Length: 323
Image (cartoon, rainbow, N blue to C red; front, top):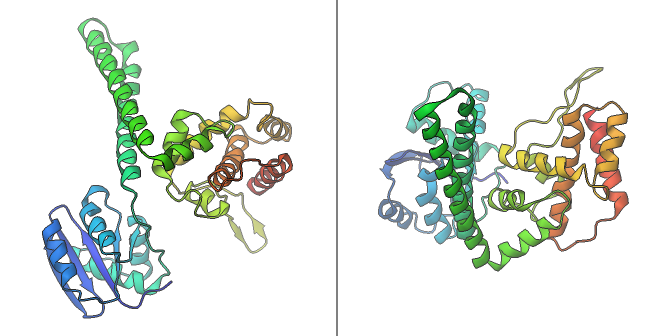
């Protein structure tokens, strides 16, 4: 919905810039729990909606304070906010201007209200992100090995051994978070029962797709960046392409699709049919990704028995749309 009384907030490490559309006023406070709490006390029960850009750790204190007081807010993609600025012809950029821009964005567009942050899932997402960083560093060292020798090679191998131990330690910490939360354990069990979904893919989906089970199948596919978009104009019908979305989720689903495409009772027959139809390799496997997303959504809703004809119809429709 479009919110009439909106406060836009531009977030920096040290301070927060606000523009209050109801009072037509700009002000700045420190980005600290005490300053945020004092500002919220001054709202005096107003039915406001807060809009700010996703800024990683810097918006954490603000989100905690808003959720504690059950105040609605929208956390928007910074790229979307910048596109909105271009659309209204706003080229200048300062903290105060950005706060006013976000307030206007909340008054002009039907922004969705952010769901409360699950503390356990937040910790899991942070740990999983750290695991990804360590794995990326390990791959970089592995790539360097073939061109090193002597002490350089010893250093790279020692670093890789340390990274192996750190990855294992972080994965153990992730397991501890899952074990401590019954809901997350149940989600993992349902995900692991889906063809192609292994421990790493299940962990990725739980950590970075909290909307799972609460959104439609099409919305989940779009969030993962797996929905093919039209490129049509007049009588011309362009080739459909996927774009945007959460790359980490898309990567996990793609690897799951590669595994599932080799499993006779999963998607192998459909992958073979697409191959015979001349579909490119990545198209064949990206077509399976939305189906896995739909399948896991049904598992989260307790629908554990997915009929075979549903698999066939959905994958076939995705193949047709990708052309």
